[in-house]
Length: 390
Image 1 (cartoon, rainbow, N blue to C red):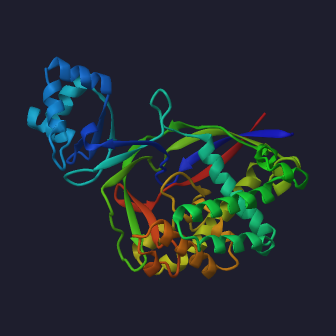
Image 2: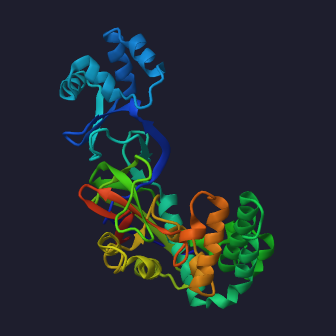
């Protein structure tokens, strides 16, 4: 192996969300609608604060009383009259862990999906998340370079898989098909019988965790813009904790440029990898603009985030949409067959999603957006700069 390394700077063009799997409910944070702030607490210090004021039983009883929208904010208003007073006292007592921007009107979010953090509570992006985004873009590039019809047998198997009677059966068959396809693309011919991904050319791609160097988290609201709608709509008041636009992170990238590594795909350095990432995001733009660009000003503004690869090298993290996570559109013989297959997939997996009615020009039929302060945008746009390491 001839591994070479780069220090890569990742800048968030729009908010980026990488979930920890943790969800905070309204009883776990304080929301100040006037100041547009959410306050998170040190759990141990909050427990000590309740004990100091002999409020443990009182607070526990309040939580156990069945109420549809009870919150920590409501509890503290009862105790201190105003949120300002409550926050002031809690801050002096060292109970406030951190505060983040959140503009959600009077009542605030119902739940918050939390960003992944290290053991010290600092946000970061796992290297596995970044590598996964690179991997999808590279697979799409291989299909495009080698002409998609070479892999028509896999597409035929996928079209058969969506005739399955159950969602589990369908997903199992599609998952196996996509796994077999990836092996055919990435494992040397003399190793295929072993069917071990350890022999994959992707051994030649190393991506470290992206650590924060500048910026912070804020709370962004999930929005969907469906085909036929002029304005995006809120399905539920679920928000995400995300890195703000302009946030900067750094990670270490290793590329093996030999034939046993990424050199097999013509990737010899950071610049050739970046070109492939840009190609994939432009492919997504072409898919999205056909049904959405003429629909509304909101859609046009959002799509500007990726209309040129110079503005975004990739979409990263959660909430970036189905197309960003799959190579099905690239694998399909033509766009309409891709739409037909994905529509059927969505009908089986999400029977209440009205996919049979709306997934005609594109599937799925929604553009995934977030409200970033006063700006409606796509989630996860970022651009990269690489500096060789000795």
